Length: 375
Image (cartoon, rainbow, N blue to C red; front, side, top):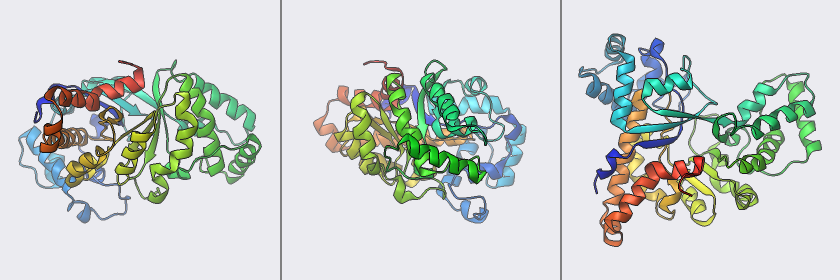
């Protein structure tokens, strides 16, 4: 079975855009995306991470040039045809579809249509709730007007081409979500207005946004993704434990809402538990693939200790650079292949079952959850 499923086109259900050709030689940015460390973190230490050395190896492999330093990479990038380079990396990674979180994009990111052409994939958009709330906010806009506009946009999300929604509540207030009375939401909104800040950070307002948006998403069969676990220093990792979502899961999955737990590391076992006991819960182990290459095999195996294969999905959470996408795909396929070839797995499952597991995890689960295919 080892790597037999390489021909299955990958569905990456959570990722971001890459840069366009104008930033193809921005090597410091290429280095910094190999870690979630802030901009002040020393370059010399970032260069000592396996994730950076993996990126260098990918550049060597796909350009045929013996690059070893940042200057080497910059020189090679300046000379190459970026469009051709991207096409080759995404094709070699086996990508077929990208479900793009529109809440974050690097500087000079192409449009979704141009991203599709640049990568040779089909691209689809995910709506980030907090970003939508901020875009519709105005310092003197009454709460009722703001909420009417916001809820209308959420209700029209599927018609406008979105295939899912995402919340970054883990970053802003933590995942122990709860219902909020409208009067309390209005008080929180007034405090937001007084703050003079465009960034939505009031816990009660975020809870109101996510809790009240959930029924509208469920009616449209739009999954709701949550950032969980690993992220940049803005997040309190303790508040990103997906177990904190239990009340939300119990409130909305019975009504048909699909809850998708993103990243999950180091809480991938907890995510696997939730997916194994609650209908409507799905998860991935994205981000650890390109940023923690040494952990991928172990994390994939641990993620699958309890969960059905029908609840686990491939995702890269890659952004900015095509090398990051390729690395995520290569590492995940290798780790998942080793899992399927484990003597215990082969002893108790048929070859046909293992092929089905592969198709579900690499593509079919995402299509079923986001588009209803195969239901």
